[in-house]
Length: 128
Image 1: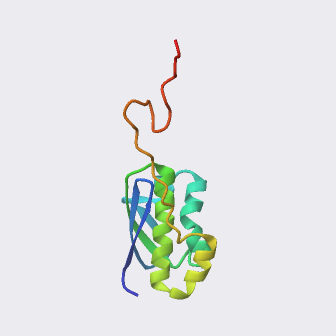
Image 2 (image 1 turned 30 degrees about the horizontal axis):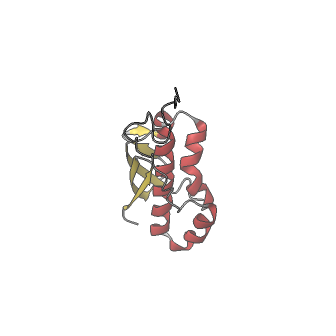
C-alpha cells in the first residue's frame, strides 16, 4: 500500500492526513497524539473510525492540523481518517457511514452584524 491522503474540516479547523501501513502511530504537527491532545476524550474521538473498522494498530498517520480549537480539530481529524479508510478499503464505507463518521458537520460561526453586539444579540431596547 502506498501513501493515502485525505482532508477533513470542522468549523475553521482543517486536517490534512497521510496514511501509510505501520504500527498505529499518529503524529500531529510533529507531536505525538498524547502530547497534542492531552484529553483522553479527544484522543478517543480521533481513534473512533479506526476502532469501528478494527484498524487501530494497522496504519501510521501523519497529520497537518491548522485553525480552530481543540474540539473542532479533533473532529476534523476524525473525518479525515474516516475518508482515508474508505479510500484504502471501500468495504468499510457502510460501517463508517452508519456511525456518522463520513458526514461533514457544516455548522460554522455566524458573522457579527453591524449595530449589534453579536450575531443575533441586540442592544437593550429603551422606550424612554
